[in-house]
Image (cartoon, rainbow, N blue to C red; front, side, top):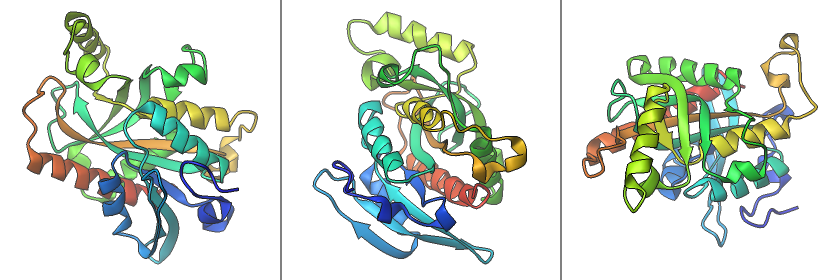
Amino acid sequence: MIQHHIGLDATHLAGNDGLGRVVVLPGSRARAAAIGARFDALTVVDNARGHTAHLGSLTRGGRRVDVLAISSGMGAPSTEIVAHELLAVGARRIVRVGSCGSLDPALRAGDIAILSGAVRDEMSSRHLAPVELPALAHPDAVAAMVAGARAAGLADHAFVGMGHSKASLYAREFGMGPMAEENRAYMRLLARCGVIASEMEASVLFVLASAASAGRATSIAAGSLAVPVQTACVLGVYAHHEDVGGLDPALCALADVRAIDTALAGIFAWV
């Protein structure tokens, strides 16, 4: 059945010997198109809501992987809709490729953050699971993206750690509006707790993957491919989160390219 918002059905997600296409899920339509431009045998499927799907394959070292790039839009509510519909038609491996603000001074503009999990501050996931449930990327997915960073020659610029997924960009992260002092204090607290980056979508994606795998746990001996649903998140660092007006377009573009390079290389270590 064609999904209402993404305009795709199970035939679009078929591939990879039954595992399904690996989905690359940026927020931006432009980033989705840039990712799709790297695919072989590219097919583009438009829809009325702007979530254009780019279907194709990647080839490396004699291996071919079936892939799909589609934008999630901005924020957790849009991501929840798109990811839910992707899972409904057969997505089993989804890697978010996005951007973030750094909470750790070690991460500079142009670097990459690979999230092991995320603080659930975006509200949408609270309608999926109680707040006590952690939002975690699957360890095999994290390991694959780490391998991707190494394969892309970006190990010196890649960092692994906890992220922060928020509902508000300007108020929560940038400290604007009537609750500025409270929000700035919250962000400082996250940094002291070891959170390395702030973005808006990862936690709802991680919780959806956990719920989609419920009741289907697999042993380590079964191997990574047997794990029902895995999600990963690779982010390009645009700036420190307090540097509201200091974005360097060239460094932002570099961060985007490095995040894409990492994710696409990591796919080959994942499936």
